[in-house]
Length: 596
Ligand code: GLN
Image (cartoon, rainbow, N blue to C red; front, side):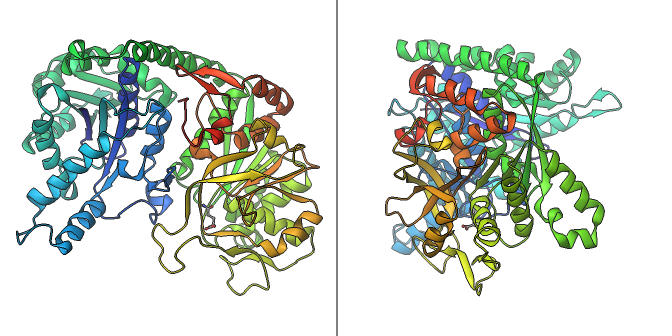
């Protein structure tokens, strides 16, 4: 097993995730099978209970793992399906060691951070790295390890020590360390001191970075590169300049231009490594697809715009909806449109805001009214839900394309129940446990009391119901009888209200296997009013956009018919070197994906 460690210095949030994903992609282009692990040094066992406003989106895996959003980047860039094991936190490691201690596994020894935690980290990494993650179903050749936080933080110390030891354990030609640093510009001068300091810190901790990736606003001047090389005791070619780019899809190209592949070839002595010719060919295909993708994306950047109002409660931090935005981008590209996301705080659409801050209220409504489509994404808790009801009402009654995701489905149902079925006090139990018209209720699959990892999580089947061949969404899923998508929720449409809602025109076209859980709703007499209880954004890929998003963006751009026809013609296509089903058929492949 070969390892690439990607760590960071100077500041957090410096783009390690994209650099790690891009490095993995480049290794795939030479024919290696790549996997990735994210280490988050915080004490939380997983990302399930962390606020999206603090940490960005909680990404959900097929197996129901609730993990850091970087795992979403790995899945998208490397075209792999990861498991909860690919996410390592301090909490998880301590929990593991403490459980073993309680079982008596340590035979009376004093249990310590070194060696017990550090060994557990290495063993977990070695085991996870070997787990097959792609359609070859074979052990990966290389594992990217991204270490969150910055070197020097107290909480990352055991991980750094574990990485130092892992480097020895893996052997000379099997471990490459990329340290990501920042080169700020002060009075037009590129400053190298923070990088020098960051490298000194890494070395003091026993790490020896092979490559220094410098984040910078502009390209690095040659003099800056030479200075970093000189003071950090590396060759200039070991200094990679990762300047800000229009789109993160360009980062692999930027790294390739700086000969990262050649350097990795040398460091890993890949010339002596046995890579299957089929995978080498596939690797070339991946690279040519990727280059095509970035150039075509530039073309779309200049084309016509489709504007989507995203009505949510975590709009202050755009990373809270990272996969939603990615899925919209994938779809906009398929529709040959430039995506304009209009961020609307759902609370600003509420009557209470009209009283307290009329300016905000009118601005929010003006933005909602002028958008081509309305999207209400997932969320938790009361705040903003009346604004979501208002947004769903606007889209439904004005024939504006609507996409509801999870909470966005639940509140589309509340709106319909109130305004079409006349159930004026319809509400979700999540917002009012005593409501007299609970159209959305608590329907846990497992535990009713614990909060952590007890939601309905991960890949679950949705069965398209009889007499739904009229459904526009179903067509985009290639008329599949069922689809598998990832879920993350506790509440669901109350089965007792389903016939009432359906009789009034709200069609539940997709349900779970038992027919008890409502997974997809669609309005027949509307250009595009679709809501899903699952989160299709987690499975969207650049070259294989998620069907609910694709239909929504296409309808918003006025090209639904054309896109549906193109999509139907693309039943089987070659993407990323594999023959795969066209966009939307991923549900049939049980979550095994084949496009970036
Ligand atoms: N809060 C809702 C539930 O738990 C919706 C969850 C979501 O949007 N992810 O069911």
